[in-house]
Image 1 (cartoon, rainbow, N blue to C red):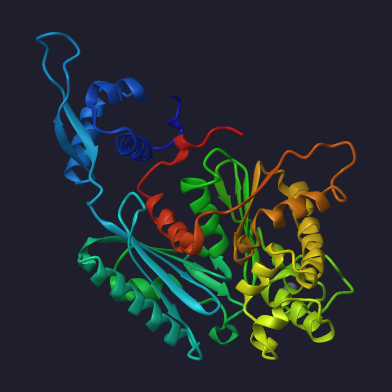
Image 2 (cartoon, rainbow, N blue to C red; image 1 turned 90 degrees about the vertical axis):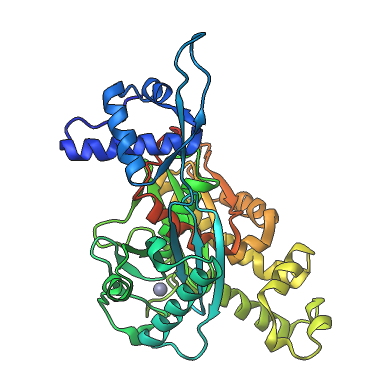
Length: 414
Ligand SMILES: [Zn+2]
């Protein structure tokens, strides 16, 4: 297994080796030193060093005695990952809610909470809500702040991940620009904190824990009030020069189309976001009685819920199908552009549109045939995410965990 970059500085090599060994113990433990040396091709003395460092850091612990390789031989000590070593917090700040989870080092959720943002939308008010969510998940987990080893937060905006700065967030214009977000968190908690765009957190979650595991080139499209994507190229998150990579919501796909919140006309977001879907269904319902949604809402059609629209779609309601057919078309156009930009092995649809089920994907695939290059058989898989409501926070937690573990050996080339 050739995983060490020998041009790196010795300290970096040590850290990489430590990550590799920790990751193998985490996935394959309980495991002996001899077996670890064999699997990693790291020499026995170096392995002993790494093991004592990991033990000292309480990242691994002894887990009994294994069988000896030969009869009468010395029985080896086995090591396993200490998953109770510490916890991480993963959060997602969405347009209308804050979602926070606390996980162990295997990214298993121990406690979780969703808080509605409501009318109190200033930076301080949302930060207070975020801190309340931290307090709640820590208390619910019967742990204390000292056991939290890292915090990850996903935001719907342009994020300078390296410097921990939220450059701009369109759904909270009153926050202004260039907010030192990480500093605000660290000033209070003194804990290692990472922020990134929500879509990149989602991509990270898919890559490490779900549908993206077997792929190196992945695009995750998040579909809610906003539309965005997270791009992974050769196993790494691709952010671009100005952290704009994946901002497909504001790519123009219909220049004569309606005005977008960003000021331009015909952005993908203004055509296919869930707000656009609700608006289009409402306007059809007002001029057309051919839908069972009229029976459900009985004159209160303005209160229509997204989940009922998707149920109607799955139930083949003709009015909703008509609106969705247009949305499928825009999705197909957007996805064909994404394929030609990145040629990913898989495109994963995240967020509210997952409720539209496989029917939605099948229809998009059908419409995609109009857009792909002639003579080229597009092999990109298109799938609906199965990570559910907590995908964002799981991604935020996984970004923190990836600072401790090397996840690279779970990716196969594809
Ligand atoms: Zn726009």
